[in-house]
Image 1 (tube, helix red, strand yellow):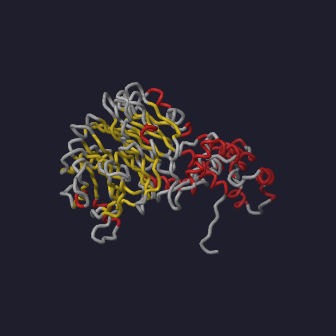
Image 2: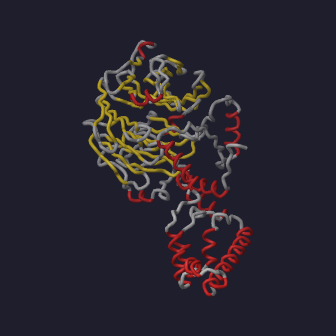
Length: 533
């Protein structure tokens, strides 16, 4: 059929191994390479080896190197190599015979001198080897390489669509827990993600240290703590131990700030660059693969309370305790924009590149104009354009009598024009950038307030001051489930014999059933982060 093309199975395996290696799954890549017999060098004709074999007269090695790409199966390899070897030897014998008896093969003296000059066998081999070395070397597995590069670039710029995956819980649990979970799952609603039911593990921090910030990524969990450390926890052991296999530098505790709490973090789409902000206003840029600090600069005079990276990781937004938001270039460290207008803490700042204003359907125009959204403890959410005076304000007083602090502003995955706005009140709002309320989520009691929030593509999680976690449907606003004693199970005991308040909820970007919670209450006897599943 016109337009169709085929790709060899070996190329597909090379593509899979490249993906496994880029994701840090080295053991899986090694096993696949061993079982398939195909490596990243398979299919690449190394002209240096061919030329060396020709100079030594080892025609079997030269033909074997040239035919490497097509020898995927052992049976086919033996017959093909034997045939080529026979032809090569026959050809060399023929050339030697022609050179020794030119008159036998030519009746013209001139033709004899042109076709069969007086050269030794080694000279002829040398000429042939030089011709091979002059050829341009193009790897035969170029297609998988190009596909890998294209996928990495799309992931780096955030162009890949939001991926929703379902992971079955295969952890060993006792019979009672199995029955309990099965009973709870019977109340699941269609079209929503699986809701976490039980604690999976607890991440424990150092003496007198608590978790101040955390973020899931494809290779585990990154935490920033009050003892200045940034640590990466291994997903393979349920986040209970540090990931020293992929990041061996963690044995030396090289990532962190100096005598300052790590209050916020942001990670690039390709999981290569990490940005962290601390309690003295300093911002650091890290390369995760090596643990090296690429850049550091004084972004504010007060605590950096919020961070956000642009899709291409070329710019970073920083919000601070005084209510000021600034935009810096990652490489140049230059101050690009200043967003000034909030009168209190900035709790969140985001880029909103896909927003269409006034019916504008040109995505490129929206992206280049650079919309920025910030939320603050002054009770407002502001939308900015090119650092100028804010274009509009999302004001909770339009639907509420009071104007409480807004502690969370979450962008709906894959839809930057819709955001979840959570004030310190008993109602949370789903709004668009024009300030229109699309959905509301109400607590069971008007005396309770929401303390922290997280969301997936279909579910909203809200931690309440009552110690419970309320689970709502994102689209309908209906209460799906209440996880009782959530704060008690997620935090440690305090010196005052009370339950610490939840400071933040975070979700795994690709595993909706994994949720984490922590409290930065320094009266806790032991700082912990609890992972739920």
